[in-house]
Image 1: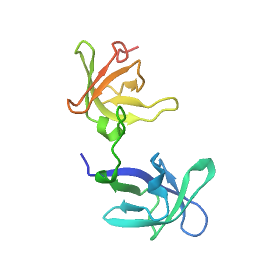
Image 2: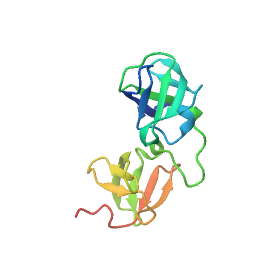
Image 3: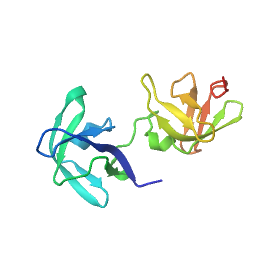
Image 4: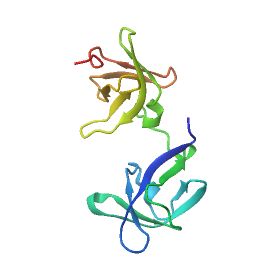
Amino acid sequence: MSERIVVGRVGRPHGLDGSFFVERPSDDARWFQRGARLLVGDDEVEVVTARRGSGKRPVIRLDRSVTRGTELEVLRSQLPAPEPDEYYTFQLEGLAVVEEDGTVVGRVRRVAPGVANDALELEATGVLLPLVGACVLSIDLDARRIVVAPGFADPL
């Protein structure tokens, strides 16, 4: 697992001063506040201006020019501990998914964002399992396993 976590990407420019929209920004707004330190490739950069643009998306300017599409990252150790029964999406990637009776369903490729809820995308099949209580019954990070209700992974 990488020690660096992507918190956004450099998006389209906003104005003439080098500011840009942050694409796919983290929900944690502190990464996009004035004075925040981010990693861009091998360099550490600082947010020198920060505001909200259209759609309340973060608009920031860094202390140096960065190419559009570049990932904005932080070290995993900088992340606050999640609350009980909360998880970072990267913690779910690679976990085994099984039904209540032990039937192996697959392994999580990624957590796909959704309009109503996120979904677990399985590696081999691409099946999307909704991250809702009716489907996901338990998540055990120590055992690296997610237990789901029967029927959600069945083909239509």
